[in-house]
Length: 239
Figure 1 (tube, helix red, strand yellow):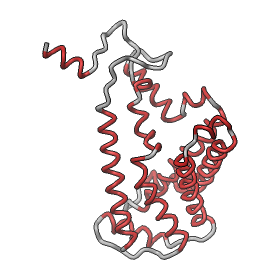
Figure 2 (tube, helix red, strand yellow):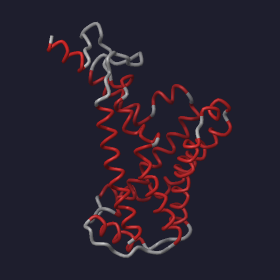
Figure 3 (cartoon, helix red, strand yellow):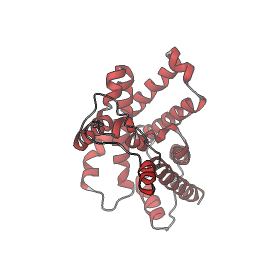
Figure 4 (cartoon, helix red, strand yellow):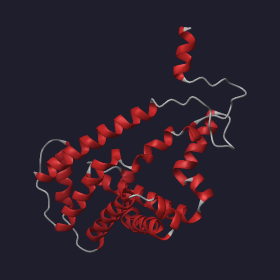
């Protein structure tokens, strides 16, 4: 019951916090056109640029190859791991989730290597260490602990995944089922719940935030169209 309550609370905080932050981002004024040049001059071009930014981290690749390698390893590994975990929340399991299972199993190694590289950068690069705050280290350590505890269950001390799936499916339908009491699993789930709680108030919000960055999502067409912020347009209409 403790873990059931923990995940209900963590899920509410995660969902409400994310909705609030995304709503807040969407209402942030953008009074000027400030796309990073060279920038696309059409909306399809902006979509293509944003896709490159989200999928291959284009701007990071241009600025620092080492950070790009570790960052991409972490994010792509995390994507496969999360896709693999969908088997605990779907019945029957979606066909593409079945396909990613073997890839997701070893993607945890990519994820941990990427995180270790990003954490080492915080210690070893002087200028990065100077601007790093305790929260920067704690987030990376938390993610590393989640990845490491997951790898322990995958490669060393296996847990009862049938009972684990029944637990999470029960949570979805408010029918609480017993949770396996393996220590690695309990540690892993406690860490995941902690991450869910702090996600909406941490720098991890760069995930949804990138879509609201005016330097990335604006069309570079100031000569063709006059840019008027929403609040300025309302003032013009009233006058």
